[in-house]
Length: 122
Image (cartoon, rainbow, N blue to C red; front, side):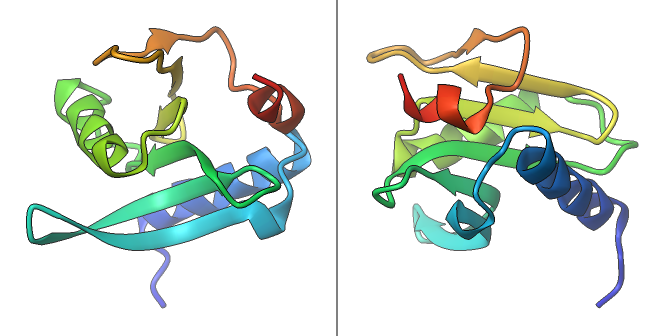
């Protein structure tokens, strides 16, 4: 398997979640396939709580990809399927984390990516 720039970002972000955020490795789904409007889509990282319920989607982009509206629209579309409370986008250089509230279409942006215990205690 070729280590693409996006894959490098994904692998490093996984290590960040595990080592810094104390996310249990067994609760991280990697490259999760699903269907949306008859199209196959892929979530880079899907974080689950200890009961197996999805709680966060992470979208990884190559470092040369600007994190603009299209990226946020992409992750919002993925969230129509999973309805998770937390969304993260990263290109390895910049990271944005947000918390979704009921009936809200855009997240409230957070100052930091939550630790796993913070994530599941909400």
